[in-house]
Image (tube, rainbow, N blue to C red; front, side, top):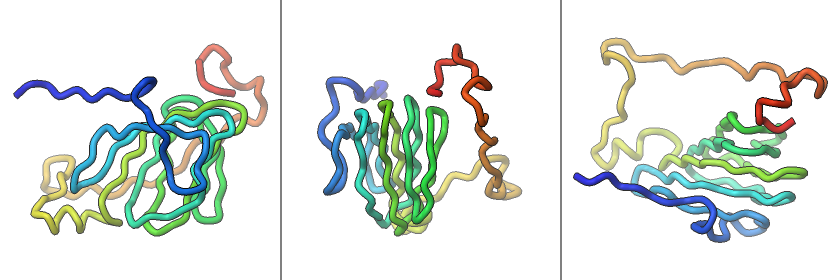
Length: 157
C-alpha cells in the first residue's frame, strides 16, 4: 500500500469556522466516521466565535498563541499546549498580538460510543490486561515575569 500524504498549511487553507468567525483559515487533513483532524491558522485579531458542538475536541496549539474560552473560563494558550473542548460546552479561540496555528482533533460524539456503534473497538494502550486510568494533573505555572523566560527558546513571550 502506498504512503498517503495530505498537504496543509500555506497555500492549502480556506476560510473556516462557525458563523461570526473572522481572520481564520484552515484545511481538513482527515475526516471519516470516527472524527476530523484539521489545521487552523489565526491572523492577529482572528477568532472563532463562541459555539458548541456534540463532539469532544482537542485544540492543539502548534505555533504562536492566543486565548481560549471553555464554558465561562478564559485562558491564555501557547505553542505546545492542548485544550480540551468537551462536547456540548460553549468554546471559542482568538488571538490578540500574535498569530496562532493549531491542529484540531474532533472525535465523533462525546465518548467512544459512536465508534462502538459502527463496529469499532477503541484501542487500549498497554498490555491490555490492566486498563490505563485517565491521567490527571495541571499545567506548570507560567513565570510571572518576562525576564524569567528564555528568549532563545523560540516560544512566544
